[in-house]
Image 1: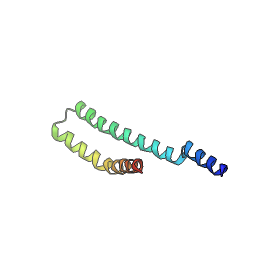
Image 2 (image 1 turned 30 degrees about the vertical axis):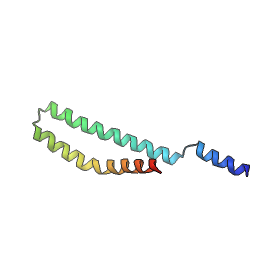
Image 3 (image 1 turned 90 degrees about the vertical axis):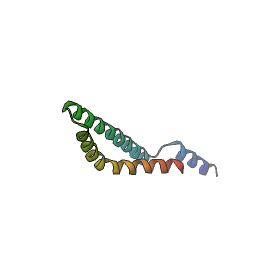
Image 4 (image 1 turned 60 degrees about the horizontal axis):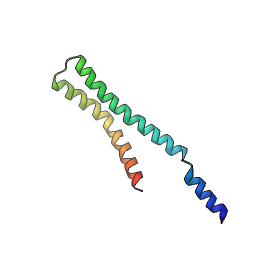
Length: 82
């Protein structure tokens, strides 16, 4: 009985390496997403884009990167509720 309790405490006390890796990758992706959006604004500012130029670039970038971002954010918010 005491051995069972000890295993339960050890498993809860130490973090799962797979979950840590997933979390790290998710954080990197979210940070990279915002860096890319910031780079779009910097590029537009350097090249003196009009509003339509910004809009076109942001639509292109967010169209490619928003799908995986939504999946990552949804996964971790769902996991935090459980």
